[in-house]
Image (cartoon, rainbow, N blue to C red):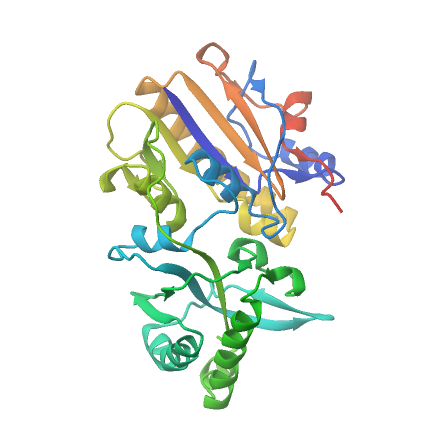
Length: 351
């Protein structure tokens, strides 16, 4: 049995990796092993989702092909009823001018309250209806359903955050309808003056939506994995679509969920926010918590009889695995070994 730990944002840019890893050597980072086998570098498709390599890797892990379909699986993981229509995630966001472009920002530090969502929903519902969509509200989450599929490819939310919004962000025959919907929502919210309170409090305004991840739910191939932990609803939805029972699929927590014998998978995203912002000081600061979580989950997996541990580091468009066997799993506190430096270094991104 294999324990797989996916570490989004763990691969460092080639030009910065040596300096960052030297600083990491002075931290309390540990939990790697001597004698591990370094798997070949994997290049993942990223044309519409740079920076979401972990989603590509996981989508493939569960048997998906092409660009990851996230929205209908997130809907299912969040408790939504079965729908035969195409579903798109509709995420409230902050859109701001950054130098010479517009950039998208998440509202993680000040998420919309139920009252704020209720006040904004009518404009979304009206604009969605004009585009042939129906707004589906699920607790604090918005989705758009469509009976006729959109010919549309949109950059993943995880990729678009803090990045310039441009022609490469969305493409396809339906891109004009997609843009029109977004613009109408922005205009309605601006005219209604819904952000006055947020502006007065110095909080990010809720002035846009990002519509992405669209597709139709379908069952994925049966998996050998028997327990999955991820804070991303789409990943949990993929696990459910692969046949796992609800009790074996949870957000990340201190202990693995109860499950029958088989592989285990956890997605540990402590490094990803800092990686997106290229804040390497914060990246280093997140390492101790990640180390502790990795060590605890590995120890539990070993006690349950898992003979192999795979640490999967991902970055912008690559993934690389460090594979440990029982004989090689020993705590190691040096970051000077060539295989570890190579494991955590991402080659230069393609132009």
